[in-house]
Length: 325
Length: 218
Image 1 (tube, rainbow over the protein chains, first blue to last red):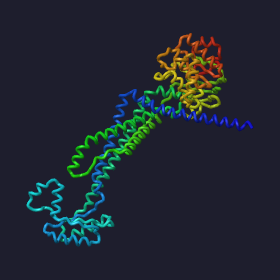
Image 2 (image 1 turned 30 degrees about the horizontal axis):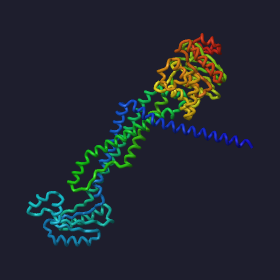
Image 3 (image 1 turned 30 degrees about the vertical axis):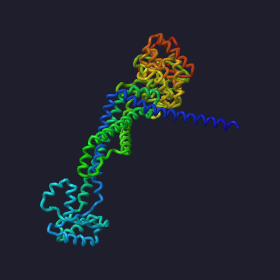
Image 4 (image 1 turned 60 degrees about the horizontal axis):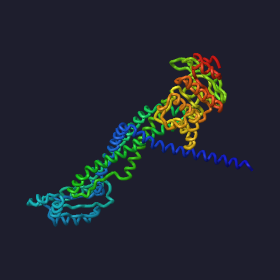
């Protein structure tokens, strides 16, 4: 009858021990987190220099990203259009042009057709271009009539577009055909290149963050080798010894990415008012984009992660070599 | 507790430092390790403290063969040892309390327990009340007593001391030796390397003598 009680007691004691160990483990981590921050403030000059270098790397990557993002936003509303513009010859009269437009409405491949007369074109141009006064001085209208055709959605492939374009070009009234899609495509390709470039530059700067942090940790380890020896001699495990160094790496990454974010935001604030002025001059509703909340979180996590990774790499190799004498 | 069988240590450039050393140390036994400089005292202690590995032979510590041991197991086995050094090896940027607490923190002992045991340990070496001081604010004798408090705080089975009184005057040295005697009575095995023959003879414990790497008396 007594035996189960003993086991229960033992089990409880065992649980208590586990609980205590876990608590002290957590306490240990909390202590590591804050004492490493304290250690950074003990060598303010070195810490600030390192964090600044890292922050500049972060700001370069993040800044390049946000610039490309803004350009994409600027061109974004054009993306879906694959509208064709048929510019008519100058000698085509308005009635003949209207007749052609009506014919094209019946075309199996056209979804919608808009006819813009010479006068409409000029009025619109006067209104939007800012050359109103100068244009009034002209004695004849230099603009051609235009028929805008929105092809059917089924007409997705490039080949079909080319075929339709060639067909319209054959029409005797048509001077030349322009497809908006062409320059949208070019623009998209340029953006694709820019995005790849952002990725590659970010990758390089990510390596920079990793190696700079790794080197800083290497120096810190060298400065504190005495402490490492003694910890080893009293039975500290590798993970115990490297913990404070990893936290220093984490803080370097975290603080520098936050500072990098501040730098990007500050730069955007500096260019915001001229950009928005330019945007109103072009009659555009473009608004400068900043890094969003999730992008900030991503930046903080990535930079901290890379910094910890760099520290871990250095610690893995260097701690083994530091043997007590 | 500790057993050495045919232990040899050869350094690539300095030749053989220890040759075929055999002895054992029982639980709660206190012994002195003597010999001239370069006789191999420090090498022997380094082998027992797992700071180096022997070239030949076996070293058994509390049932574990520590002569062939993986790097990962060393921290856990070192926790059975209390190490004391001639140059104290204290962390100068930490308080006496933090220095003594280190072996406990490393094992993950909880906060109250650490506090209690550090105080008990400092009490044993007569430094209670100096927890908040930094090592450099203490005298040499006091610093060595901090080192001793750190060595006994985790209640090790074996204490290894390398010239613990090397930097201290005779009076302080004797004081420290009496302290070791007390630990011995508490059941801890103690091996003390020293060349202070006078003190050794005065105390009358077992003496293990090395000469040019050979054990000549045990």
